[in-house]
Length: 234
Image (tube, one colour):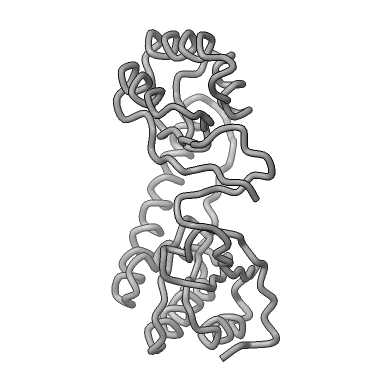
């Protein structure tokens, strides 16, 4: 059933969300990561642990500041009865649904993925959820491809987030200098190469034609590449 009141932002992709779901909603709710397991006892356990941890951390902060003669105050965000009630209400909405879905949580943000808009309509009625955003996966290309208007290379490989040694980074810098004109580094990777930092990020990428480049990168640091896609014309 299509809900005409929900406004979906189309997201062009090479596959559905998690290779299964067409729709998603993201929203903000305090302590929502307590729903990593959809179980009321688990929620209560996590809430009690967080309250206890914050009380201990608050007291340590006070004690440490008193020992150095400062009076700086620090407060954790209170976990209110209203927040706890909302967590259980959201859990009930999901647990009582017969609709297939996937819940993903991160700190105070959550995502629900599904193929049925009626579940999203139920979530939309939960007014305590903030900043609700709805998206729809539009599959417009084969899997493991990226569309570019004028691709100059055949492949794109993304780095893993990992820490290199200073020697490995120097080898990486020399490698890219020697291969100028044969491959393209992303802007973020180019900036990083000229900085003192040693940790790569998962949004760094290179565009290239010869798959042998990956072998050479593996010699510098095995497992540096996390995924490779083909570049196709839009």
